Length: 305
Image (tube, rainbow, N blue to C red):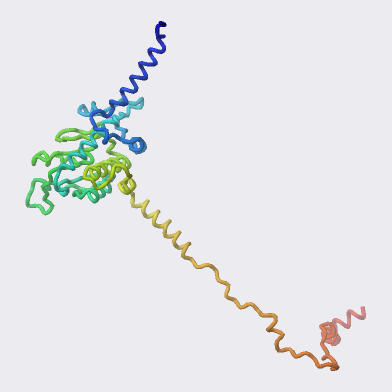
């Protein structure tokens, strides 16, 4: 019996430790809710894990590490777990219209409207009118059972009013976001348009999957691009480019309708001379020029010289 070498012991330990870490990454979730590789790649490409240089004390458990430039990196595994938890809470609401998604940040307005469209919820895009949840006299008074907030700092008025009327809050929280009156914090980058759009897209897809309207075996036919914010200038440029392309395609091709002379038709009226008849004399150009030149003094002077 030969003892195991120290190097092999370390290698086996690192291998088993890596396997155990991968298997326990989403141990709190059932196997059906585990993310696919495409989902993680989309989250990384959308920079969901990027935090800020500042950090809140309540967000320390969601921060993975800090880069050398001072930027905090969020734990993307906990982001996925909180998305699954938030989707299960949304599905538990019997009436989908009792869920309100709010975004005062311009980057999340389009995502909020699309999320409300596909899940049947209500949305408030833009400025939140104070008293919407507390003042019954206002025309915009609402009594939701669940509130989804894009940023608890910019949407602080809505979060504060929800605490007055006991409305649970789901919020996308960055590394420096305050967690006061927030019940479910989804650690994510809430300052990028791609990150916000992707989180709302994942949340809407999971809600529809739990309701049974979308299958887990097939991809959702709604692209992520619909949830991304689009600037008005970019829209104008794209519309102008499309209009230019349509004009080029609709421009008629050059048509050559000019009549082509028929050579055979040109000689149709010419009668051939009869047999034995002399041909008509044809005036040559040289004789005409010569006759015209005899009467001119310039020609006479040239000949004398």
